[in-house]
Length: 199
Image 1 (tube, rainbow, N blue to C red):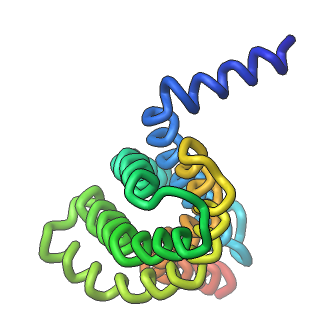
Image 2: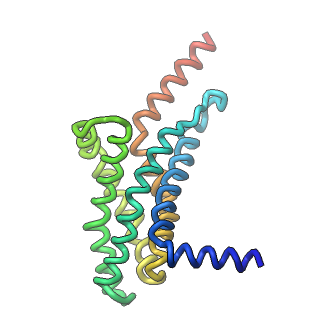
Image 3: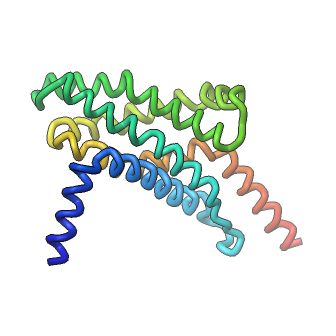
């Protein structure tokens, strides 16, 4: 009975409320990816000094909410323009995704996060120039094989959620690249604190 109700709820979420489902899922998984990253950043340090950065996760979630609808409509458009799962069609979809969607979402993430941190456009653009190429090169390593599975095996309504789950790893990498400078600063501060305690 409970399983049947759960199945009906999931079915409704992926049909009647697909846009909302994709949007919330995208935001939620970006937040989870950041949570993993924060834990990893603190490995090897005194657990008593760890303070979880909730505003940072909130910013990741917010950016995800903006990226979710764009992802939803992009895959819907792509499936209408390139119909079928033939090898050449899947290859075209992957090329389109890497040429159009990947640069857009990398840019949206970096600029959006910088603006939510209260930085101006000048700083946001500077960070984009500094980190875009690294993220885009990593994108090429992870997403083409993942998107082959996506475009070849999955129906349109499951594309965004599949992408979001692959994105758990991807989001952790994004969060690390975005915040690594701050992470190093925190680590240096912790080392200084440890040194002061020992002296």
